[in-house]
Image (cartoon, rainbow, N blue to C red):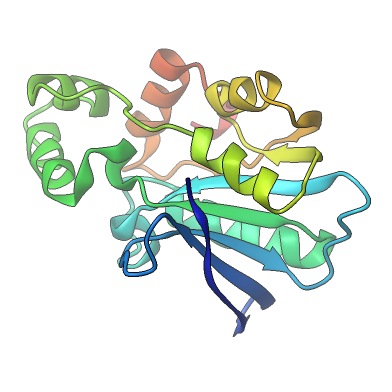
Length: 198
């Protein structure tokens, strides 16, 4: 069972957030995080984003995906409207950065993101959002507006003890490099994306 290991206020360019680290072990260097906007009202439906780690997009601003832009947009949204980002350490759809770079190499040869994972003998998507539900339960959150385009995340909430009040789209316009990636997200994973943006 995970539990809160540490927390502190962290000022960012998007505003001030309470950052809370969750893990089973206090020596875990890769804990999951809850990033809580300072004006969040827990008595009303809470705006929540489940966000999986993406070092290439968030840190190095890769144009292959929209992950970094989605994180920025979620921080901006929760700062303005209140809310929480549950930051999950599931790099590369939970295949890790080494396998992710191997998959990128295969994509350079013409495979799409799903084909590359399967070619490596890996799942198309190995993420598990059950830990995000566990974190919301630990924080006492019962009613949420979920910031997502991913129907799998919606299903995790619907199948949990948490009430899904609404879904808030979080769509980032495609660039020339990410267009194929977003098309695969829509066609293979069923992400709720507008055609004119991918």
